[in-house]
Image 1 (tube, rainbow over the protein chains, first blue to last red):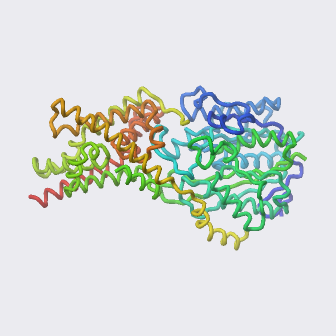
Image 2 (image 1 turned 120 degrees about the vertical axis):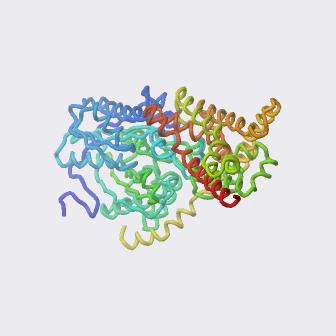
Image 3 (image 1 turned 45 degrees about the vertical axis):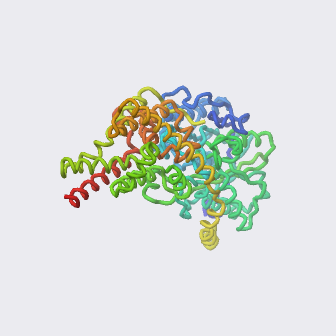
Length: 338
Length: 106
Length: 151
């Protein structure tokens, strides 16, 4: 077996890369949410001074990376690799952001799982000895996602209660070979799972099988269990998916109980904020929650060990129209201070 | 009318576009069978403003033109009867697109 | 997940999803749809009476009402209000002809950034197109049937 592999799907880092800084920029609605004090910046205008939502998202991605670098006292030319992805067709937000940043760039597509996908890749590249510094980032924008996946903004529709609200925001993490932590300890790479959910308004449920598969695989590969963690956070399963996954994982003998949360539930106040319905979704959901709140808590040592499991729904408008069900993916990353 | 639409929207997974299509087609069929006429007489704008009314106008127009012009009427009547609504929608749609921008949802 | 566990979960999964699926608030939605849809038709009736009192003939009245309602729908969409009403009204704002206008204006505005020809021009009928296709096609069929049966 490969030297650094652990079990079937997990990688254990011999020299755990350190996340030396993070940055998060959030949209207006997210800035009204419960985690607002943890974001580096909250937009006053969802267009971010640009002409289109796509340009705004690309600027969001670029500014977040630059902010994370300046917080680590680094410049783009010091960075060996940029791992980035987003939801838009041909991941234009990320590649157009990379066009300005001039950092060697790997474009990723993992839908909303991109935060942990990019963290996984960045960590492996550093531990493998191919880089001193790497940046992992992703972004999403409610308006650009809405027009690509659903309806024009001004079109009058009702959102069913299971629908989730795409987070406007971007998070970036700078990983380094040497640093004072928190460290990326394990990476469990997910498999694409599909149990036949077809309702694009119920993506949380569609991603549960993938998230459950990855979490269970992670526990089996590492021998860890929920009690070894202070927090187990999935990306954007929402309220419905959050309930489901607790049940599914508990059935296999792992009770996550109060250790479990979902970034999509944390990012909004689903009681008070109208129309977010079942919670947040999108690449930005786990990105701003991790780069804002969770990272802060790790640095302050309020959290010791965290399992971040970003979840992605790998559908496209075309596949939905052709009657395909929604495949899901989830990648888990263990981050700890110790 | 809207009540039926809402039940369809909540209870089935039909998208609004599909509901619109079925409503208009239903209007055409009801119009052709002569069932919509009494509803229209009774409901006035209540029956002409919703989309089945649009379908009714299409069917009525087609029938009227067939009576007047023969076979070609089947092709001219429907659109002729609804020309005002469709042209207005295109024209005002274009104007609105010129003068305003979509806003982010709150 | 082991093969067996995977199969177990996949068997139970759709049942679990349905159990957790919250009901749409059907009754409240229906009342709102009924009231707001009704109000829109009332506005239509108001204009109908208005035009009738100005001596517009009974045959032409439909055109006037359709045009003015379409304008209202387009205008409310343009100033960004229609989608806010629709959030509560649901089908109440979808089914009236104002909803037809909304479905044309919204994409036209949205895709302005993609240019005046392929953006506004091309995307205008993204949602309303099928309505015209099926509406007009079925009216042609009705006309044809009428021609062959009645002649």
